[in-house]
Image (cartoon, rainbow, N blue to C red; front, side, top):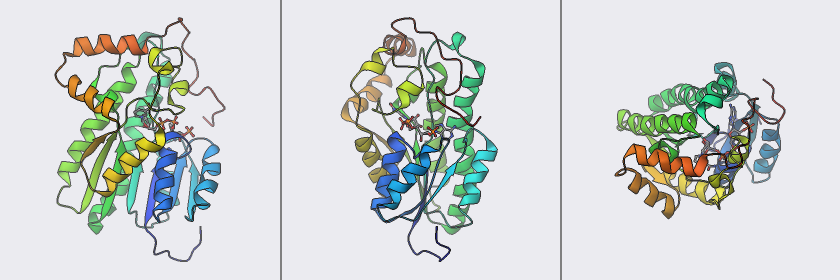
Length: 276
Ligand SMILES: NC(=O)c1ccc[n+]([C@@H]2O[C@H](COP(=O)([O-])OP(=O)(O)OC[C@H]3O[C@@H](n4cnc5c(N)ncnc54)[C@H](OP(=O)(O)O)[C@@H]3O)[C@@H](O)[C@H]2O)c1
């Protein structure tokens, strides 16, 4: 990135190498933001090239955002530049029965989806509040409304994140900084494969377009809205979920997420090369 101070707004997008985060970064670039993008795998550098072709100045950081060290590297890469928008989107799922899951994988989901997200949000939003300016988009999920049999830990992390986003928004409501919660439903990304969910009903079902989901979230963030569910079917699902007993919701989730062919759980954090 050039050392000449830029007058363009500056956004940090986590999980920008693929899926919803990639599309969020595209929208930021198309709308005049310079970018700092982060993801765990080298693919984030290819994504950065694509964002540069849209006219943005882009820095890319390869970092495991489940670790404080990884999050600190993202913050350091901002080099003290004021952040106008934080799109805290990195996250991943984990299918199969809780008792069959490797604890390292369980911990990695929690550390990415909750701990890393909160750490980055706190570090980046504090200076935003001091400047009385900024936008924050946090990717939660409609999964946060539903006890997620056969994806129990993931849904729990998203229940946490959904709740946290509303609470933080309220705490800083007079600060000039807005917090917006994006709640996608099943979306056609690498999520299901990575979580070992391909052998499930939801893994095989038709899903939302990540570009549509990102646009809904981006527009809500720019409008300073509190929260948005992407897609009318998912809106309906969340409305029904609020009046349905949790025991019934858990049974409904089992039907969607229970492995159909008894595929064994994966025993590594990633089913691809990892720096960990
Ligand atoms: N797809 C859905 O159905 C759905 C529904 C509701 C909510 N969401 C949420 O949407 C967000 C984006 O997911 P997606 O569907 O776009 O999945 P995706 O295509 O798998 O993209 C996930 C992104 O997050 C990054 N990431 C994951 N763990 C990371 C870690 N520990 N450190 C750094 N980067 C990490 C990935 O980078 P690497 O590949 O480099 O790890 C990738 O860039 C997640 O928070 C997810 O929970 C997804």
